[in-house]
Image (spheres, rainbow, N blue to C red):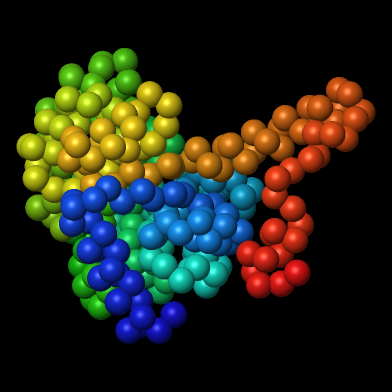
Amino acid sequence: MKMAAQILKAQAFRNMHDRSTVLLLPNAWDAGSARLLARHGFAAIATTSGGLAWSLGYADGEQAPLTEVLAAIARITRVVDRPVTVDMESGYGDTLAAVGASVRAVIAAGAVGINLEDGLPGHRGLRPRTEAAARIDAARRAATAAGVPIVINARVDTCMQHPGDGDASCFDDTVRRAQAYLAAGADCVYPIGLRDGPLLQALVNAIDAPVNVTAGPGVPELAELARLGIARVSTATRLATMALAAVDRAATELLSSGRFNCLASSFSYPDAQRLFGSE
């Protein structure tokens, strides 16, 4: 991708976070899913670290080698004409220099946004707030050096990693972390696991910045999230697991019944071919 075009996409993606409307952001896991989602008219496409890792033959949690992840990102940015933001998990690097190098590589693969989480890979706990903020700062410095004004979505894992404590008990730490990450250069905050409407509104009021939530059962509908001031909604791994669930159901039916009606589909071979401009 030419640098000028990538900068324009980054600026367009940044403008989608002005909080005048909610950005509905689907998460793709390969070129085919990204192309399909783009054809449906979504303004931007995100990747799911879990879905992408599974498609490459690895577990989630930075188990997939970065070289393979970068190749997958490059395929996605090649086949869609809109901004792509990448789930970088915790940054693919033990040091700040390594995080910066990973961010530069993701930008070189065509991305104009990243997710960066403050949990350790494999949900092994949270990084100290100052350490996590320093990694955000390293990512921002790397993007500035690369000349692409990427949108950094800082994922706050407090509630997800302490689900038994309840949303209210993790709220204060979520606010402190969000404020630190915004000060370090993040543009958007992603309190994953936080879904209580009043608490989401309180977070929006406390940090006065774009907030991302995960779509799914039990989460307020889009209109209600807009009323609460939420700026961005992503689907995380759900579309990828739904695709796997469809295969799982068909495989079970094939083995148990010996019948083939389970292979009927509303999406055909010609439909798939048309995604890439060929019958």
